[in-house]
Image (cartoon, rainbow, N blue to C red; front, side, top):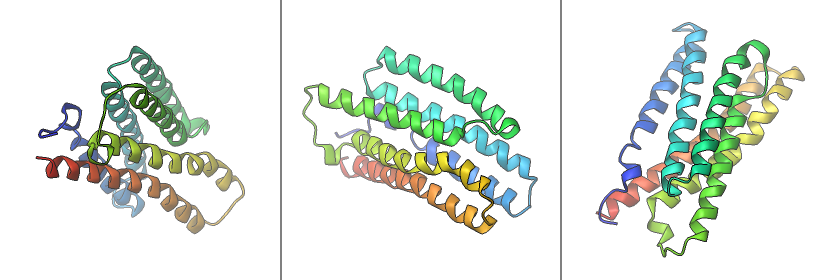
Length: 189
C-alpha cells in the first residue's frame, strides 16, 4: 500500500465538516448564535454523516447494488425522519442513522471475510476505518434510542448533558480510528 486508497483521498472532508458543525453547536449552546442555527447545522451534518460514510462503504464493498439501493432508501427515510423530528418528536434520527451505518458495516465485514483477498488488517486503513465506524455507531445507538425516554422521566438538564457527552464518546472513538487509518496511510508511503 504505497499510495492512499482512492476511497480515502477525500476523507479529510469528514473531520473538517465535523469541526465546523461542532463550532456551530457550541456557539448555539452558549447563545452566541440562535439555537435554531445550531439545530439546523446538526441536522445537515447528520445527512452528511450518513451520505459520506455509506458512500465509503459502498465503494469498499465492490459497489454492490444491495448497498447502493439500501443506502438510497435509508437516506430518503432519514431525510423525512430528520425534518419531522423537531416537530413531532418521532424516532431519533441519530439512532436511526448510526444503526443504519452499523448494519452497513456488518455487511462490509461479511463482504471482506467472504472474499479470498489476503490483507494485513492491522495496516489496512479501510479496515481500521470500518472498525471505528462499527464500534462508534455501536456505542451511539443505545444512547440515541434512550434519549427520548431520559427526557420523559424529567431528569435534570445537567444529567442530560452528561448523557450527551456519553453519546459523543461514540463519535470520538470513530474519529480516533479514522486518525489511526490516516496514520497507516502516511506510515505506508
